[in-house]
Amino acid sequence: MAAKSSAEKRKYSRERKALVVHRDMQGLMNYQKQLSGAGFVPIIARDLGTALLAMTQHYFELGIISAELGEAGDGWALGGVFRMVFPRAYVAVLAPATTVETLQMAINSGVTQVFEASKQPDEIVSAIFEELTPTHGMVQ
Amino acid sequence: MPGKVAERPLRNPRMLIVDDEESITRTMQMMFEERGFRVQTAFSCSQALSALRNGHHYDAVITDLNMEAPDIGLEVARAAKQVRPAPVVVVCTGYANLENARIALDMHVDYLATKPVDLDQLFMAVDRLLERRQDLPSVPARQRARARHNDVSGSRSSGSKRHD
Image (cartoon, rainbow over all chains, first blue to last red; front, top):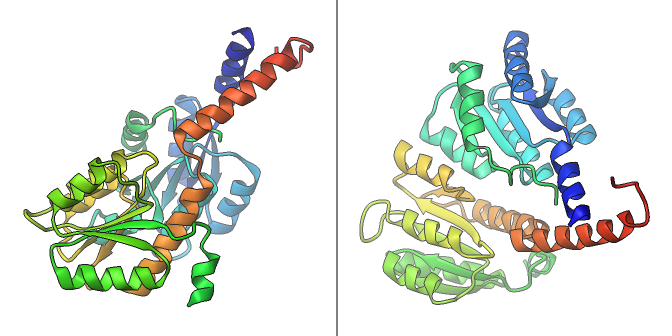
């Protein structure tokens, strides 16, 4: 039992990391502040290359990705890659508007949730935390 | 074509295809059987639900959305998602709207295809999702693996302080 509880302690003492990918620096800083306040270690990236590099160096339980990085819609592809690399993570994509096409992109990319980019970061982060379960990001 | 089937990690995956239009169901059945799937068909939500609840196990379920009633295919998707191990769930529809697409996203449907369905894209998506499902251990499997790991950690930690 003692060994089990120490294993539990190790599991829960592990740093929880979130990747935020957004081309706007102010947006990144807002998410960074919100996530730090919620106990996550935020890793930020402004472009696809940096985001992919970060994904090779960290284990993420949460990803918040803007749908528009270098060009319109490339955030969806990144969301799909994030899902493949971290199959248990929570992946949120920030889209300009919620349309049927947007929701279809989300489903087909394996994205967990779509938020309108116009929403405030604190609203989005609190909505994510309402849905985030202990199984998101669970180490396999 | 046979080469592609041989590459699939799961041999002869079992699939349930649900659509009230028999011609569509039969065409998809034929196409997937050609690719090595073992296909069972259902022509209504109720038929599909009884197949899912009668202990039949499927690796993938493809369902239409509007059958006996609008959006009733979401019931098939929901029932399929409750089966363990959960099959890959694909919804095909010509009537996607904000409401049903949002519900599909929230219930973690794996793929949403709009009619007319591009079969090549559908094949690729199903293959990719089956591969991902193979790679991802089911929750009980992960729990067993973790229990084994904890047992090993426990026996080691009794002789070492490394884990304390």
